[in-house]
Image 1 (cartoon, one colour):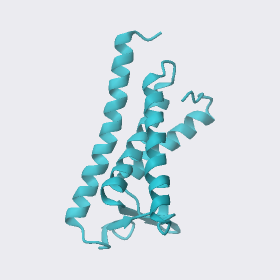
Image 2 (cartoon, rainbow, N blue to C red):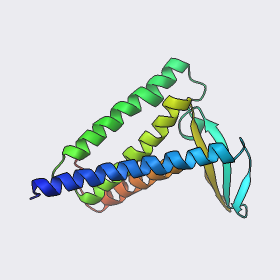
Image 3 (tube, rainbow, N blue to C red):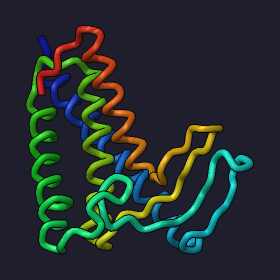
Image 4 (cartoon, rainbow, N blue to C red):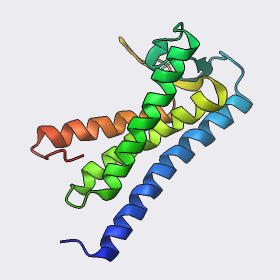
Length: 167
């Protein structure tokens, strides 16, 4: 059973992890927006790891970029904000959740908020990395996407190996 002190420490660590993910995302996007020209192509590791600068006005891989503005606000700003706030509240108030699961959700929430900040402040999300390894080629992504993907993969891993999701 957790003591009040350990519950508070756990909550502080979750909030710090969420803020760390948001901070890494926002700083990296600011650096790219200020130092990489729009659609510039910079091979970092030959042609396998590319730095660029694109603005995504839709969701993942540009989905919904041509939706009407009101629908985009509802689907890409209002709904995600509600979901992220509910998730954050749930992970901060749960007392019997696996710490790895809490961390996984903190990554998802931090990455989600990072992209949400861009959508609200700029009307688009800055994406800048791409990986190309033989036939494997990713879309262009950012650090928030890395955080969300890391969190989701960890949630799947924990779920497959018998860890109950209690969020």
